[in-house]
Length: 222
Image (cartoon, rainbow, N blue to C red):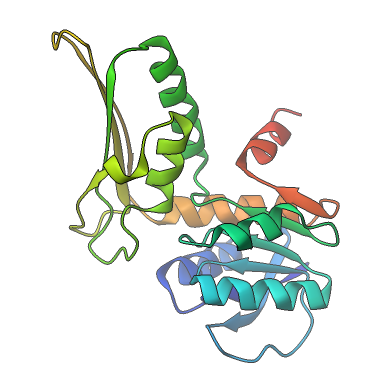
């Protein structure tokens, strides 16, 4: 069993990840350390899974480097400097994605293809995460915008309810006689936690370097 540090253990994602690991011993992971921001880390581990805050992500990354452990983060609102540091990592396996859902990754590919196919159509991106979501627009919305070269400041959003999140792309024809609407709706946060555990079980076996959703999904084809 690979020993896992969960950073942000008291958050909703941290708790869901712990439950999924405990219920699925076949994944080869075992939670040995549960941590939140600012807490000391005692003991060795093989993998850090981080869903916390930019500060917490930096702390967990430093601990993983010190321990020679793999590091996975799905924390949003990370600074460009920190993300670049992850991309340049050579000593441990690291994974970063603002959204660890395989469905969202495929949705991103779909909207990119749609925007290219319907060139000249006016795009609009709208998101509806749960009411407690802190960053607005979210990292997921920004990554969707980047995929179709859409200005992030034009993203519209609302924060309501308890559902994990909805992202919508609308393409409107120049003559306003056609609308194409593509939607991804996450009904339960558990899907993100389950995906994170799958990626973590894969990442801990990889060579040092930077990994993302593209590399992970490519590995599924082998």
